[in-house]
Amino acid sequence: MIELRPDQREAGRRLFLPDRPGPQTGLHVIQTGLGRLHVDRWPEPRVAAAVAGEDLQLAGDAAAIDARDLRSLHFEHGTVDAPEPFVAHLESAFPGLWRWPRVIARLNGGKAATPAGIEIRRLGWADARAVGGLHEDIDWISQTWEGPQGMAGSGLAFGAFAGKRLVSVALAFTLGERYDDIGVVTEEPFRRRGINAACVARVVDDVARRGRRACWSTSPDNAGSLAVAARFGARRHRDDVLYMVGFEEAP
Image (cartoon, rainbow, N blue to C red; front, side, top):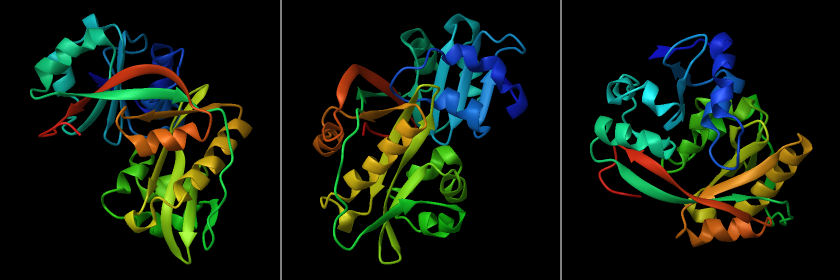
């Protein structure tokens, strides 16, 4: 497949439209210039593969590629968002593929009080070191922005600080045209205190101010995540599935 330069990526936009609630990897790499966008041909691609961090999204005509094309992406570990016609190619290209059930919801806004002793604010370039100091179990939060500096400098992330320590981050994880998919993480000692919900409230409000709708993706058995979404008027849009590449067992 052909990897497009950022200035060529608009050619692939139509393959990811119309956007709907859920992961927005394809539109994210087109609009931000981050990650990678591969197509079968240019300037009139029939199929596209977008990679941001450890997220891959496939769109277009599955008949225009095969398993060899997918292997050429050198995507060895992460999640794949793909319509059903691509699944046979995925299973051939990535032995041991896992299916990860997902719940996709739209958020309608809501409020959450900031816990005592916590400051929540929009992150900026100067906060990159604090983002880089997050525990390795949750540092995935910056992957779609190519790391702490990109995420902190995006202007779309909000962080909760206990003193000088960054303990929670929420942001637009991927940017669509109409929908932004929200991500949030919180350090283990600070969970179950309402800090992540307070951060999410800031992001949901910010998404609305930019004329978009916030959406939420989670596992159907993740009670904590579902509870946070419910606080923001979550409306179930659909049940979906991601495909897990390079995992020894399902999450």
